Image (cartoon, rainbow, N blue to C red):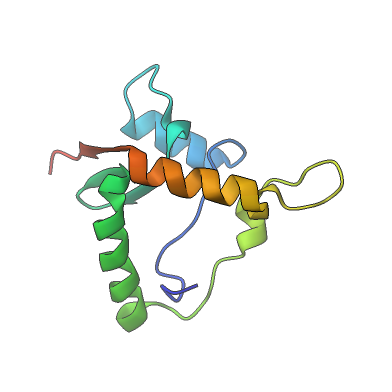
Length: 110
């Protein structure tokens, strides 16, 4: 939302585009679901390593974004009672703690 559509969100499991992207970027056998990833021109930045690039992309989006905000429901998994699993307080706190604890970057050879 902050990036005005500049940043596109994709889930780890269900999106065909996300699966193909993971195959192109990460080494075979690497579990990319350990953390969130920001993928930009310079590489794939995971968790803590992605916080500064994420802030930069948000700022770029504010000035150059399309104004079309992504549909957050498309990236959240629904549980059996149709509640969006990515919004539970416990899961949000776990993701924040994990983001601050982990971090890695895969650089692109450009």
